[in-house]
Length: 62
Length: 324
Image (cartoon, one colour):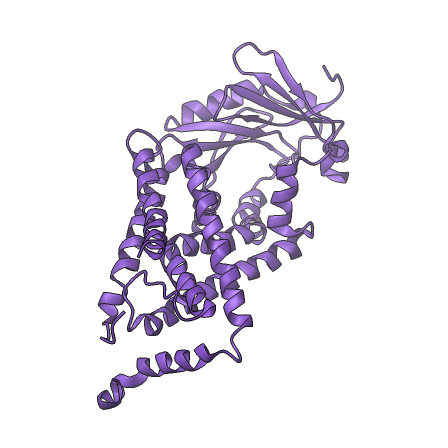
């Protein structure tokens, strides 16, 4: 944590990226329905969960 | 198996080769009580009977049906649906306002920071922000599609009152009320198949059904592509002559409704997607409960001042020298 102020762009960089991956994951399964699209959808939608786990892990271990 | 009874509709399962046939004593019985119907499930290959139901009003409710009804309408019919729809709308409003206040809170923090040293409330504020913003897109999609789903009854009603009513008003025939007048249902299916080669028939309502018309077999079809297989359209076949009566166009608001269902329930991408859905649901519950905790503990906290300061830093660009 620092006292430096962050721009909107910086604050929303991660959330926007995660939101984009989520939307892509939701529509990959809806429009794909088969082949590579389903695993791709699962992978994309798992990213937000992994980010949460990573942040919580960092919280525990420094 | 049931001489003297009528077939009201048939439905073919798209996951397994099964055909479900719905039956009732008579159309009058159905009109008096829609739950007087019962169904028989057949193996689509051998024609063997797999399972039979009791009439719906004598059948117990399964656990999942109970949960679905609680979730959808609190057992209160249309008013319950509209109430839950309003709740979903408030959920979406809470998400949007949460997104708006996320920026000022994060002015001085890196993404994902959770401050543990200072107070329990501050820690939960950071966790609330982290979990909320990471899953924001998913929660918005489920919230918005939830609102749309709860509007299904009025939307279908609107369609029936406008397009469908206008279409039926043109027909000058006598309603079919005797089974002996009916043309062959198999021929009706074949007619639809021949007329709409790009479509698959999923179900048909017999003439007289409250879900059909008094004159037609209504054959519900869907497309064969991933997207179009979500979009259903009814095709009509004259119940006396067996003549093809055309396809009924579906308005955009019912198309939106059809796409909202999978995106709300998450049941369109196999078991892994359902598991992901559960995990995201759990995260959402933590966000909701922590938000409630933060709101309840908002007074008398030393952090309240810090929040004020954070909020103030958001408007500070007007006076740059006061910002730091």
